[in-house]
Length: 109
Image 1 (cartoon, rainbow, N blue to C red):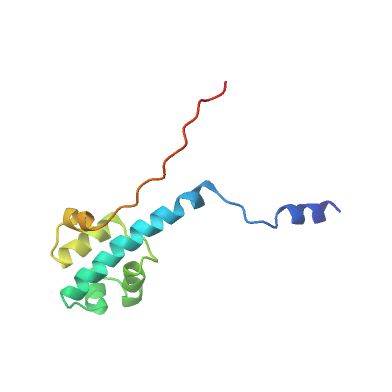
Image 2 (tube, one colour):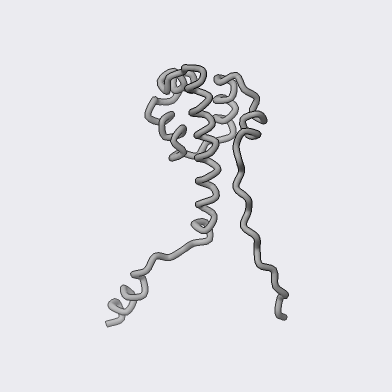
């Protein structure tokens, strides 16, 4: 009987603190990836070419460019070198999401 009660309590999804911030992280990653895709296409580079230059598979590059894989800082600089753009210029092109306003209230001690 005790096990049945535990199963009933565990049915709903548990939201962890990390999952609360996930949508903002994804939107920033996707917007950087979108700008990289636009720059790559403007220079008429293929995904395969970019993957070879980055020493990764074409499939891994595709996931990176689609925002499914977060881009590391090192990889970001490598991509900027290949696309012949300053890292700061690429970040200027990306609209960063505005942080949600926190509702401030007095603490109760």
